[in-house]
Length: 395
Ligand code: HEM
Image (cartoon, rainbow, N blue to C red; front, side, top):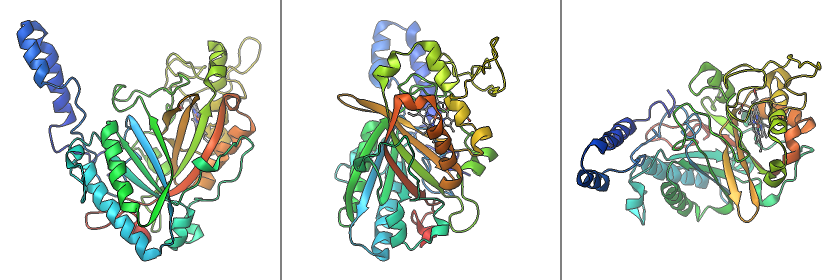
């Protein structure tokens, strides 16, 4: 069972809380005074108590429905050995297990900030140097560290690489920020922060269950993802066999979107760039978001309805032979940078992410409005059981 499905809120369940909220709305039939006193006591929306299970076969924050905030922290390790790395992973695990369940971290300076985790998840990743320190051989790295360069790259050192990754996600920015601060304290004697990237998503709070979120370009983004907990998802994401069984890999690409240029394109042309309709995310050859795109369909002039340069054609398994699970967040960096923290999970980077990115680099009209400025890859070990620690399978 995955972390997401074993999610068991300890406080009032999310459903109970939402039902209570609806009951509050029903007081519309009561007098104004009664409504006022109800409003004082009842939260308008309360995702605070919701918890995602920490222990299990897989780490949380992968098949978990995307939360509304995502923070990515990459650390550079100092001069440490294998035993030191284990000490750090134990510290992180202990604090992450508490914080995600609404309990204060061990040396929490603001313990009250832990009590509303709001679906907080903390996911650990190991970059190439950490894998050297852990003495994980190449054939167990599943492509981590070996990303080729692509013609579309404009990579900057400040957003790339990293020895260790913490992906901290949740539906409340305060809870995410507090968790990140506590975990960053643990790392002080072992290494230092290399970069931090913050993103946001419509999913988690602002969309209905099962609704695909939109990105800053206005597109419905995530439609063709494998369904969490399906066989399809398992085959795409989880490593099968060996010590890494139940683990995966993460690729993070910081991709600027050139929104003021994009704004100049008319609606029809924007739809041709992706191959899906803006209104509902349906493929240009279909009626519903879930319809399978028909890449052979031609219009009255004999031209493909979904152009040869369309993003969904170039990224499609029929062209690339591969699938990935995307779990991206939008981001903004004032005054003028906006884009996508593109995050993908796949059992093997070389066999899955690379052929897709190659196909897109070669011919994808979307490249005219996007610019990859950061890139990093991490091995995501399987989950752990109580008493164990994240990464223990590798030691
Ligand atoms: C800013 C950059 C990007 C934007 C705005 C973007 C947007 C989209 C949109 C709107 C869709 C169609 C709906 C969906 O299935 O989600 C899509 C599909 C997809 N994208 Fe991207 N994308 C970006 C970058 C990438 C990158 C870097 C990759 C991988 C290297 C990628 C891989 C895919 C895949 C595999 C699909 C599904 C194709 C299918 O099977 O139909 N995308 N993307």
